[in-house]
Length: 202
Picture (spheres, rainbow, N blue to C red):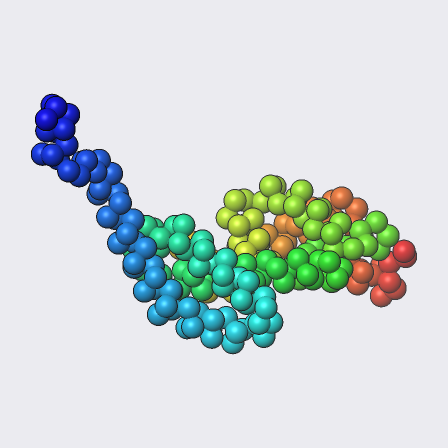
């Protein structure tokens, strides 16, 4: 028997240098499987209660669980893993709904008033707002974006770790600043009137 043969005989299984990582991955895989089986139906029911577009919900749900699998080491220790998936899926739904609204040229809420002649569709208005947002404080811009994306005041407060009243204040300040920037740029609300009650000429 050669020296190599003897070594192989003494060590039939080569050492697994990555054994710990492999076991941890297997553990996480098993945990995520149990989590998905237990939580998928619950998340789906909650999302369908707020959005009746089943196909949209299914797509968002699938993406959210895929995202959760990638980030499982973080999600598994989250205070509420199911809530994390719900929030992620809801954000994806709202993002897709916003995209559909924009494609239909439906004016989004809380945007500064569009001028009568120059800004005629939601895409142009949104581009203007995106250019003006950097002139807001970071918190005002963040709250405004989340509000525009469909998040409620309580959700925004939880995500940002601030009081609900603060969310209202930040959004109000953001809208006020955006309207001011719009006016400085020469844009006026459609309801603007000249002194005496007459509508502003167009």
